[in-house]
Length: 357
Image (cartoon, rainbow, N blue to C red):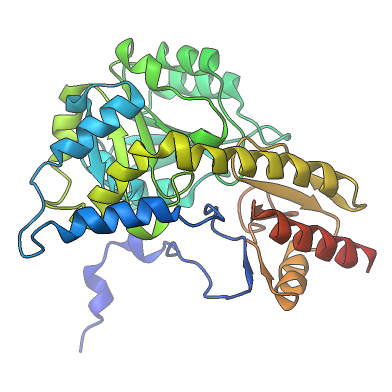
């Protein structure tokens, strides 16, 4: 028999799959999730509406009602929105219609690994620039690279996963003015930063914004994301999105979450931000740890102890974090999501014990 892998692109065979270790723990702080479940009022209303729907029928081919709710929520036109099965699907769809062999994608690293993986599978060249030593965006280097190589797509994750840094609006504008090619801002965690690029969509037709319901909106289990851009771009991206990609439960949950955002979800976001700031102060006091300021619901921490050892010791204590020491520039770092106050207390105390030796 011939090797069946001969049928796979060599560059795909060389890739490490995007995956997550199947570790389990009582305190789960490894996936940047909202530590609070979706409020019961949201769940009950979703179940009520879904019960009235015919489950034997497909969802609407285009979820127009969801797009209208999203437009109201974001301050953008419904024709410039496409919903997806998580924002990951829309990253893939966007890159499918824009890049391939001979195309170039510019990213900063460390950042969300899926950008490089999808671009590589599609045959594009990935050019990466390091963040600054402080793990913030080096806008000067980005502008220089855009001017010299004119990448087909530039992707900025803001707040950035895994570092939590943001790109401010004047710096983003300076990048948009440097190129007519696409600049994509992934805003998966924007609710925790109160900073968004959406108002710039009216001025810059080469801007694309990605968002998700998985983080601040507490719907990670239902997989809903959305893309915002000028309608002309959205029509082309939609060609790479599979029909009926968002099921009726997820559509309905997203609609209800928007409707109850101010009353039920925004207060949880404020609590998470307060806990994030408290964690930063407390970890700063632990010898051997140096947390990095974050504008998201997670942070990375530089450790004088091997991060893999920190990961293992915390797991023994029933706390699951993320070992990011394999990322570029992060060999001395670990990452954790902001949990509930009592979970964060357990993390702080456990790290104190580990650092005392």
